Length: 209
Image 1 (cartoon, rainbow, N blue to C red):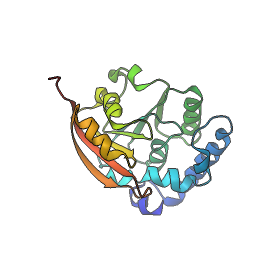
Image 2: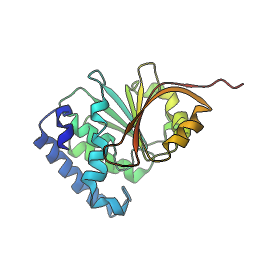
Image 3: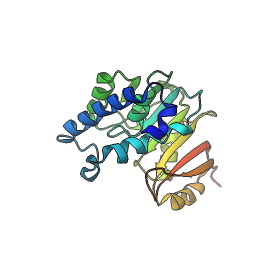
């Protein structure tokens, strides 16, 4: 967590306390709702918190509106919202599973986060219902071609997508390139030896030939 502290909106200790509260809620709710894989619950700080917070250095000062697709247990959006307390940032979390929605809203309420949770799939949301995002995030949701399809209605000229991807990212980039125009920057993950962080801009669907 410390390597990202320069990007926090408040002290490292304050962020740490909120993350501890989040971890406690995650373990409590895990008993009734599968929020993360059982294998990673014991290493939540490394596997989930640090993995989420590595997005912070890739954010711009002017980034205000965030949208997270398929939020699940809240990664990466909730750790980012916790680290961003004290900054003018608003996070929209999109998650269709009712119990996960309840969990996300509980964390947001108890930790006083600037978060809105929408309990629907992204393709059920009219883009006019939500602020235009500066940043779209997603982690372990779907392959890139499908993600592009889900992200495109919310993409504006200013929007960037910052996506956690695994070893399959090269194949996914090739496959999505057949149907989508975009610019992409690929950075190695700080936490996953086989993973990357993709930053995508200028997303547009290719015209049918």
